[in-house]
Length: 253
Image 1 (cartoon, rainbow, N blue to C red):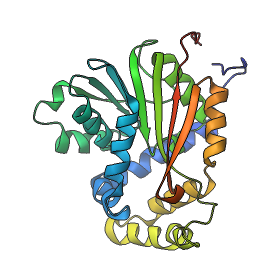
Image 2: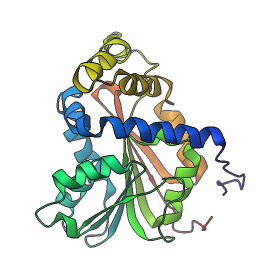
Image 3: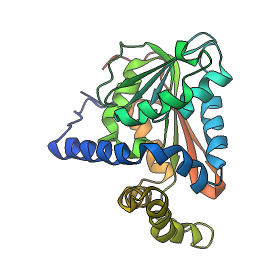
Image 4: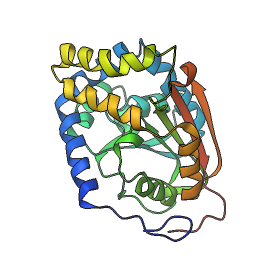
C-alpha cells in the first residue's frame, strides 16, 4: 500500500477501533441523519451537494463511486444531473444505507444506484473502473485518509475526478466567532434534543475543529498522487469543495 513516494500506508489497530466507533455512532443516528443535515445547515446542504455533483463530470453513461454515501443524497443528486450513469453507493454503516434505500431508491433509481457496505480503505472494485468519485462530509471519518486517497486513485480511470465536500477547519474564527460557538455549544445541544445523542454531534464538532485547513487537505491530495487539485470555499469557508484528477499516466499502486 503505497503513496506517491512509495512509502506505505499503515492501517493500525487504533484506526480500526476508530472505524468501529464511527459505525456505531452513525448506526445510532441514521434515522435522524437527513432531517438534522437539512435543519442544522438551514437547507444549505442541498446546494452544497449540487455543487459536488456538478464538479464530478462523469461520462454521460459512465460509473461514479459515491464514497461514504450515507443515506445516498449525493447518489440521488448525481443521478439527477447525469441520468445515464450508474452509481456505486458505498458506506461503512449498513443502517445509513438501509435508511436511504427505504426512502430514496424508487422511481427507477434502483436500476442506477447500487448501495454496498464497504470500507473506504479497501474498496471492492476493480482498478480504473469509475469515471469519477465523490465523498460528502465523510473524509473526516476515515483514518488514515491516505488509505482512502490511494484506493480512490486506484479505481478512478485516467482523467477521472475525485470531488470532496467537507467542512473547513473549525480552528479558524468564522463570522466573528459565532460559528465556533455554534460548533462547541449549540450543535451538541441541538443534536441531543432532536436525536437524543449529544455524543454523536459532539464528535462532529470535534472532528471539524481538528480537521486540516483547505491548503493542507490540498497538499494531502497532491502527495497522494492527484493532479490539478483545487478548492472552492462556500459560506465564508465553513464548507469547501475540493477537486483533484487522476493523471493520464498514473500507475497502479
